[in-house]
Length: 381
Ligand SMILES: [Zn+2]
Image (cartoon, rainbow, N blue to C red; front, side, top):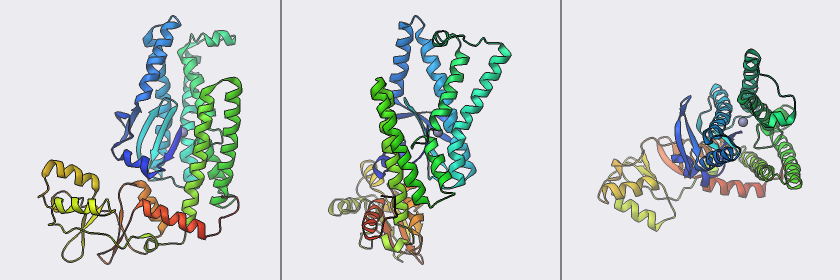
């Protein structure tokens, strides 16, 4: 359904180990594919429904699996195009209402446009292929709506599924792909902030229309989708406002300069004591010469305490691959890095020495402060 960027630190934190309540079913193009447990409930529901309609349990389940095969190929379309632009896809998750390809970041302009179009394009190609197969096999087209509803042709139903995935996703509303297509297209004619504000407004307007139609017709799935579209549009606008708020600032403006660091020989016991007596969750590890040796993350610390005990030196469990930036790194870049790995802080290193630390939390605070101090671009509020 959507190529999504990770939005909230809280949600993404759980995703370090994959989405909660979703389990891995395989890997495609090097991307973990997960399905959400509620998807299984959908399978059971469809299976039971087919038995009630006089078909077998497995025919209902089989059709849903084929349908989700099409959704998966749609998401892989986004992921493959993202790869062309050197954007990694963290995972693809299948939910009962559709799939999400979770990209590490979302580029703007032409790249965003093509990544958004790649998903629906896959469904268009699939629909074309199914149509060709039906022509070759001389599958008879249904003469009436009731004949269509009786669903005697799996090929025809799959063709309809792909056609609706194509049209539905191109509706100009976030988080549908059409919302991104609209935003990316508008950026060719106006500033990014303005384009986002317009696209978010159109998305929320569309959500109100869907929601209204859903309520009138008693179609609660439509109401549900409208709700997500409304939230998605708001989140998208908020994300771009954050980006605008940090423009022109550098890492120095957001870094924490008062924090505790550990020495490589310090024990986990000492680290645990710091964890309890300070606000800090993560501790830079600095050697005797003031150089950054690694980072001890709260999760790693807790796990190591249970496994190796409090006398173990920090050196043995710390992470050595630490994300670091110079003090003059643009804050936009810092925001991008932190959103890529929201639960890990970024170290600010000046000439090999540790100068500061930036977490997504304090960067968010900076964004909130600077948004209130700077004039808001018209229409972006
Ligand atoms: Zn999509």
